[in-house]
Structure formats: structure tokens, C-alpha cells
Length: 320
Ligand SMILES: [Zn+2]
Image: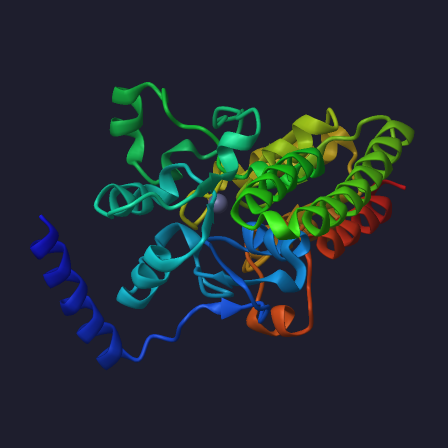
């Protein structure tokens, strides 16, 4: 088994070197080596670890995280890291398989295990057939294990995850325990401030309905604040052309709810939002799921907190 794994490693190493696939994005700190899969994990880790760790983000900025495949370099990085922070769920099944094949225990934080997960929901009007498994298979499995993966979209969940990260860092590097605890405390305080701001806004606006002319990776957010929603596709279904029926349904909902704005998510082509806006006269606004950011945004120091504060402004603009 070990020989086989080594052979696979060598082969994919050769392939990746010849393919010139760039390594991961690094926070640049010194000390512990932390590997993260998605942007929220990367951002929470560097907030807590500060300059006592180098945090690396495996999923390349601006790319589709659901179709991510690790390079040989990534595999070696995981094998040699002090802490791995991943999201869990279907998109990261590759990681489960990989960890099973590795020797020794790598400390792992699975973000989905830090919070209470919600099952993926197919809501009225949604194009469920856009689900990545196709309708036959999901019928067969009865959606049993289809947990929504986008847990970080609730700031309260972000605080729970950050506390778990602090806990693991204190274990991995006891001499920095006070440092990590202090950083976690102030970061969580800011997350809970944000949570308060969302709560007050939603309360003041009478719990408006959010209509997404897009995929819907923000279920934990709307559940947290008691918002109703409609969307074209569940979760992070593969981008597909919306059916005329879906578009017509959302247009009806915009009229019925008398909503002043529809939302689209980052990296969207915004086509559906444009069609709905043209027909109803409402405006379109970006609601960032914090799933992934561009390389430029990373270079400019974008953070989960900043993106969520922008979302707060967006909601004010939409409903205030
Ligand atoms: Zn997703």
C-alpha cells in the first residue's frame, strides 16, 4: 500500500512539475505550518495564528472549489503540516480518502463538525435537477447525507470555528497559548458585533425575503437571522442555464414581495439577475458568500469580516 502511494506521489509530482501548477497562497508567517482548503478556513486561521504560523490556502483564488483536485505538492504539504483546516462535506471527499492513506495523525479541524449542520434544502421554484448528482441518484439516496456545506456564512458559526482553531493551536504550540487565546477573544468579539448588527438590521426591516437570481450558498446566513428566501438553484449546484419557469417564478416572487432588489453571488455571470431586473425594475446587488475571492482581493488584504461588513451595507441598501 505504501509503495503504491509513493508511486502515485512520484507520478503526480512529475505531472504537476511538468504542468507548472502553482503552489498555494501563503499568509507568510513563521512557525507552525497550517494548511487550509477554502478561503474562510484560511482567513480564520490567520486571524487566530497571527505571525506565529504560515497559513496556506490550497484552493486557488478565483477557482471553483467544488471541482478542486490537489497536486502532488499539495499532498506533500498536507502530509507535513502541523494543522489541517478543511470544510468537510461532499466537496472534500478527496481529502478523506487521502488522509486515510497517510501515515501518522495529522491534527484536522473540519469546519462542518464545529457547528450544527443543516440539510440542503430544495425550495419552491428551485431547479433541483441542477444538483450535481442528477435527479435519479438524489432520489435514490433520499438526500440523506446532503448537508449544506456553507457553514461559515453565519458569523456565529464563524466564531465557533475560530474558537476551535484557537483550541487546536494552543495544543500544537503551548508556548503561544496566551497569544492565540487573546487573538481569538478579540476576533470572536468582532464577529459577534457583526452578528448583532445583522440581527438589528433584519429586525428593523421586518425580516424581509431575500431573492437570489443565482445559486444559493448562504442558507446558514438566512437561517441565522430568520430571513425567508427564494433562489434559482440550491447550494453550489453547477452553474446551469436557468429554465424559463425558474426565471418566471422568481419574477413573480419579486412582484409579490415587492422587493426592491435581487441578489447575485461572487463570480456570477449575473445574467439571470439582469433579466429579472429588466422585467421588474428592481436593482441587482452582490451578496458575497465568502466562498472564494480573487487573487487581487487576497493581495489587497480582503477578509471575511470586510466581506460581511459589505454584505451588511448591501442589505441596508436593499431594504433600508
Ligand atoms: Zn459551495
